[in-house]
Image (cartoon, rainbow, N blue to C red; front, top):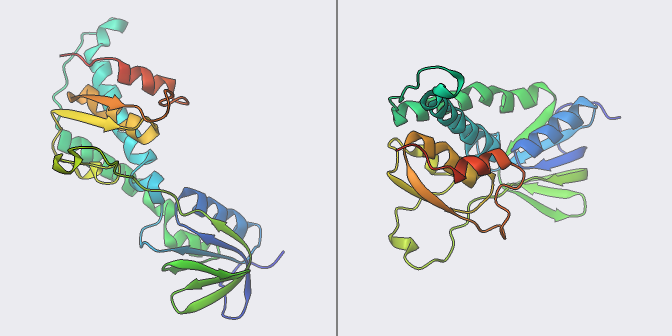
Length: 231
């Protein structure tokens, strides 16, 4: 296999990866580790993508805090005195930020470069067979992986423009717990967010858009959503 290292002008990379989220990072690290000349293109300065910044890490961190609060309330199930926790939602959100900060170095540009991956920031465009344009630079590659991820879509619903709308990207900027939260969507991030805020004291509902199969791979989260938190 080709030796891993910096991709030079005029040289052909073995793998071009478009996207700096989990899939792109794993592919780039793995290919470079096997000796392939690898280039990773990402239009944002941050790496880690949805999982680190708006998905897996923040949602699971929120659920961890909610789970502990609920177990404190129901400690009598195991013979302990139940305690109603004093919840400071801003502190919970700070806990989420610390979790992201702890993982961020493992998804960083510096770590990619240390493993021999060429890192380019900019909008990547496939310009033809084996050709990738990033800004004013044209790269040649043998194989390409498109791992550009996804983003929230705001549905065309009556009155939605007047609502205090949050998305799975912006909800993590909250500093105060919403008194009520309506979640549209039954996927992991949306369902996880609802399960995370309910035990902290927020009332609300989830509108399923998955054809009757919300969180089909996470039955424990689905069960948590169905339970009404203590008053």
